[in-house]
Length: 427
Image (cartoon, rainbow, N blue to C red; front, top):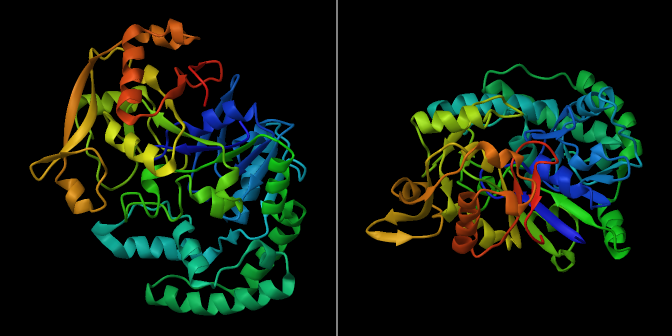
């Protein structure tokens, strides 16, 4: 495995939590490199279900080092709520299992307030943000007014920066008609967070580099999906960070030459949450069937996901942009029982056929999906535990993904549990 990336190949919710947990068994270190608590991973181990937002999926193992990278924005309250939640379920979260970058940006109360106020002000043009302050925190990072973890644990620096920021942000909050913040209350709250977080804080770049040089297997875990990338996603209906493989280098402080591979997690169909273009969306009974059978409701927001046929154009684009070495295909069991299954192999656009994802949403709105129809399979797929046991039509479906994208399928998931995972080939 060595230094390996796991990321979402669509719009998120592809099953990264389960697959990171599965692959973490072979890793010694699991690193989260971007995003915040707007992400949600569900991992099922035995009869227990764990819902994770900030903490890497490797935390469920006692012998793994888990890392929250500098590319992550951290809400201390959300972090400690998640730690408390895990410990109540019997999962230890201690400094020798979890380390946090001293360079990571801190989400403050004014970030959450401004997130909600700005989204409300957009009216019908709202983006569909989770309202957790992620975007405003990244904005402050780029504007160079952000508070980092190293600032949080320095009492004097925190006081100076927070006082200035609250003065500036209160002025903006007032313009939007929101309720302003009291410096003393916020300062006191975050001093308490600082004391609790301090034992976990270190220079994660130094530690990750050492682990790689010591020939440890390091797994880099992405949040959201490739089409929510700030540069290559369906802008502006995207997240505020780089969700593609390139985000690992800046979000974890390691160079591209140490990365040995990248796997894209893809559902056997396509989903997305919130607004934005979706060429293969099914707004009919089939879309509702996929939503209910696949339990397509957000871990973080509870919102119903939009559902559609598998878009191979998306997967081909993702494979190119992130240099994927293989795909993991999840939820292939959800398609069981459908007689004819469609896959999108191109878009009709202005009299031409294209096999790439256009940057302009206006152009994308003009794209008409071109479908291929494949024969389906039955529910026996859930009981398959090897590639040979998969229904023949399911094998043909996987082969078509490989042919179109030029990228092999290495793992297939036929259900939510760990043992419902089939290794087809090398990552």
